[in-house]
Image (cartoon, rainbow, N blue to C red; front, side, top):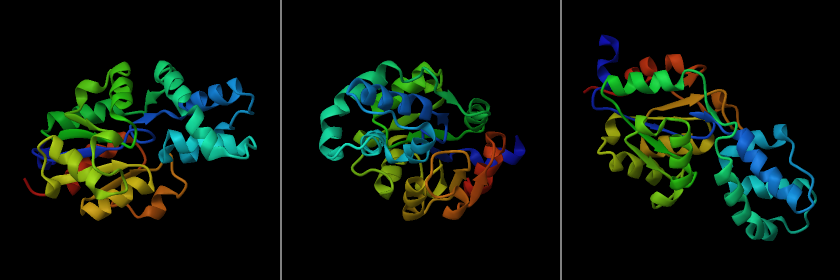
Length: 230
């Protein structure tokens, strides 16, 4: 563990959907359940997956637009409550942690890092999902979109998430998958790790992260390199 000594006292902030968990099947499944129930054609999985990081409301509107709805924004507002109700009941039907996530999180905690989820998903849904997946106990806090003054890519989201767990922004690393994560990290002045298997319209490599992660086995060492001096 000597190579991970720099993690003691560091804070690692994680995006949730597309970074820690493969949640697109349940999110797009919930969108499609609502669309079908109201007579619309379902959204193709391949069409929706790159846009999951934009949030559920945007994803539902994309489904309505793709189905030919002439007033997608208004219809989204009308149907969103039904989406949330369905998704809440099916939040972990198919969603699973990406390979290596659990072991990587345990390694980071053992090395003395604080872990916080920094997600544009609502906090209650995020906690519900983490609990159902047996991951909730691995985190010191969860800062969803409703728990902060401004959402990613605004740096306030990351800054307030770190503050919530008593962390030091100067010793924080952001781990995400999309431009919202990159924007928050760069504006907050923190190092950035992006996974290359998440939900991003822009290829993660094109967002110029400090580390482009291909598998979570490599995460602890990458965080240790970027976390700063204890």
